[in-house]
Structure formats: C-alpha cells, structure tokens
Amino acid sequence: MSSDNEIIRRSRDNPATFSELYDRHAAIIHRYAARRVGEHAADDIMSETFLVAFERRADFDDSRDDARPWLYGIATTLLKKHARLEARAWKGLIAAGAAELDHDAIDALGSRVDAELAVKKLASALKRMPTRDRDTLLLYAWGDLDYEGVAQALDVPIGTVRSRLNRARLTLRASTSRGQAPDKEVDHGRTDPASQGA
Amino acid sequence: MDELTLLRKVRNDVADPTTEALTAGRAALFNTINGVEPVRRTRRRGVKIAGLSALGAGVLTVALVATNMAGLADWRGGADPAAADALHSAALAAIETSDPVVGPGQYLQVSTTMMGATALQTDVARANYLYVAKDELFIPSDRDEDWVWNRHPSEIYKTFGPTSAALAEEFNEDDLGDELLRAPAGRFYGERAAGGYGDLEDLPRDPADLLRHIYLETAGKSNSPEDAAIVFIADRLRTGVVPADIRATLYNAAAMIPGVTITENQATLDGRTGVAIGRDQPNVDRQELIIDPETGMFIGERRVTLTGYEEIPAGTVIGWSAVTTTVVDSAPEGGTVNGKSEGNG
Image (spheres, each protein chain N blue to C red):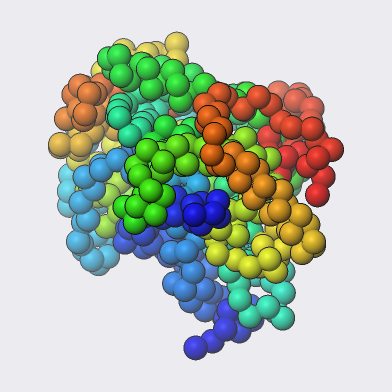
C-alpha cells in the first residue's frame, strides 16, 4: 500500500490519485469533527478539508509519510467557523452528562451519578478552556495524534504542544476532582491573554 | 479513571459518516480535481446539538443512472403555467436590469437574514426551536483582496411550548457576540478562495442545459430530482451574488421543473413582499423561491414542513433566508481570518 506522501506526490502529476487519500482518511476526519460540532456540520468539514488539502497539496511536506496530522490541522482551522455551534455543543454536553458515555465507562466510574457529575465537570472545563489549549487537547485525545503529530497539525513547536497539554490536563483534573460543583455558568470571558501565549 | 481516559470515552459513539455524506464528499473532490468548482453551501434541515446527530430527514436515495437523468429536463414537463409566467417575467426583468457595478475600492455588500430550526436534546428533555441570525459579507471589487464578514449572534425566533422555550433560552444565549472576519480572497477559516460562489460562471446559460446539469449533479442525493433542482436553484440564489443573466437562467430553469406552482401571491420575507413560487416534496417539505416578478429581484427562499415533526406542526415555516445586495464605498475596519478564536487559538 502506498504511503500518504507517495499518494500526494503522484497527485501532483495525476490529480485523480488524490481521491485515495479521501478514501483512506475521510472517516476519521468526520469522526473528529462530529465529536466537536455534531454529525451534520461534520459532513461539511469532512468535504471541505479534502478540497482545501487538494488545493494545497503542493505545500505538503513530502518527508512525512502520514498525512493525518496535516488533514487534522486543516479540519481544526475549518472548525473555527462553527465556534458558536461548538460552544452550544459543550453546553449540550454539560446538560447531557452521562448520556454521552457508554455503559462500560459509566460502570468504570462507579455509578451513573458519579459519571454524570464527572462528565458535567469535564464539559464545563472544556467549554471555558482557551481555544488553542482545547484544540491541542482534542487533537491528542480525539484525533489520536502523538505530540509530534499535534505539533505538525497546529504548526507549532513540540514544546508548545507539551506545555499546552500539561495546562489543559491540569485544568481538566482540577475540575473533575471530587468536591467541586460543575460550573453551569456561561463563559466569563477569556482568561488573562498573557497566560495563553504558549 | 483519569481525566484523559474520561475525555476519550466522551462522545465515543458518534456515528460514522453516512454513505450519502461520503459519496457527496468524494463527488465534490472529483469536481474540484476536474476543475469544476463545487458549491459547499448546502441547506440544513436542523441540527441536534446536545446529542450531536442529524435529525432524520427521511432522505430517499434516487437510484437513477446518469444516462437516464440526462433526458429528464425534456420529458418531465414543466411548472404550472402561472408559476412559469411569473418566473419568465422575472427572468426577462432580470436580464433588463443591469447589476450594480462595483467600482475600484468599492464593495458588494451582501446582507443576509437567515432563519433555521435547531433540535436540542439533554438527558431529560428534547425540543425544537427556530432561530434567526444576520450577517453582512463585503466582497471587494478585486476579489483577491480582503473580504470582510460580520457575523451576528443568533436570536430565538420561535419556540413550541414550555420545554422548547426553556431549552432555547438556555442554549441560544451566545457568548461570542459579533464576529468580524477579514481574509484575502474570502478564505475565511482557512477555506478555499471565495468558497461557495465559484461555480456560478461555469453554469450552463441555457435553461434546459442547466436543468440537465443540475439533475446530473444531484443524482441520488435528494428526495427526488425535482426537489434537488429547486433546492439547487434556491441555494445559488440565496448567495446574493448571482449576476442578472445567470439569475434569469435559474428562473427559467425553475419554470421547467414539474410540480412548481405559485404558493403565495403576496409573500412577505424580512419586510419585503414578492410572489412565492415553490414545489411540494410529498411527505417532506415545500421549497419556495420568493421573487419580485416586476424587477426580477430575488427576495429570498423559505421552506415549509408539510408533515410537521416532533412538536413542530405541519405547515410551519422551518427555514428562510432573505438577501439584499448593495454597492458600498467601505467595509468595516479590523477583523481576522478566524474571527473570534484568532486571538485565542
């Protein structure tokens, strides 16, 4: 089977080849987008990601044999158009709670009540998190990329990925630890811009 | 369970893309590969926010092969005579109207008001409501230069009972406020240049050819070829940037779609009145175009559910968009490529 960079290289002379990349990766891009903004909007994100990728195929770094970080990066930028929808979706997750976990996960958390609270807290934290931290975290957790892949997707140094992930995980851990009530309030505005520099 | 494991398990059961979505995406890609610009703006029948899945719109796949589809425009007949008359006179008027000229340094301002339906679901309640949102797009005379897009937050338009009202109130408040975007060639959010407006110039200028083109392009993607055709035409017109000659071709093509009738003589949309011309897709909805036959001006489009669903009664208008286009000397200052999330992402 050809690696992704071979497909992209061949597509520069024979554009139709590019559809192999779609058949290989469309479903995972859809899945990532659907978890953030819902299946309906994910249809558009999936399609547009590959149209943008095709248009920019000359920019792809041929030394990388996996195109997934590049595709996830394009999708992550396109998702910003749906920021309002995503904000509502996080609110929806706060409201839905354990309804968005499978039974095994609920069992692992002890009880439905515990699971309910854990998801509500997690969703509140995600909703309030600075966009760049949340993008980094979700590419890692839902996009299943490693640090290097996230760095490629967001076009930032790997050290930046590390510090953003550390910060995001600390935020989640603090919010999901026992004893804190979920914050059901609206975003109180952005946190100190200086703290978002990395 | 640590926080990352929990996060990985949240929404882990999202559905795979549907065959229709995968096929449509592949077709759009092939169109781009073959140099035919696909239009990405598709209409939405409603989005379930909390549970994050599409409302079942009952889309039936049309299993007709392309060679059969090509003949459809010729043998299927056409619109009801009164509707065809209104469309033909609008087409004539459109041709006689000269489009406003966007001089150097000026902008074409496209102002859109859009109403749509949203379904909300929490673990204890499910409800639908209607929302309305406005935006203004400023397209520069040189389309490679900066486009500016001002998106306003959505407001609740209509609710259906106490649960609907409560959920709408809880979910519709919008933390983001206005969002001002600026991007060369209209590449907002990293999209392609002028995304969505690109295929207009490539459309056939003969109405029958255009209708054949639409039937071929939409084969298998809608409830019926006729429904796909009227929706295709509405989707192009509501961009607000269709030149007069192409607008006329779209009107004339609509006059050739069987089942198209005048649905309301005095239809008011966002304060403007025109004639509503549309087509019922049995057991689904009615797609209408609202036009001024005297001037050929496109006022907007709207959709009416014929069956109703959940708490929304049959006959409810579940979506409309109204568009006005003017030439202006300036666009708002500021704005970023990714809007609100720029400084934060």
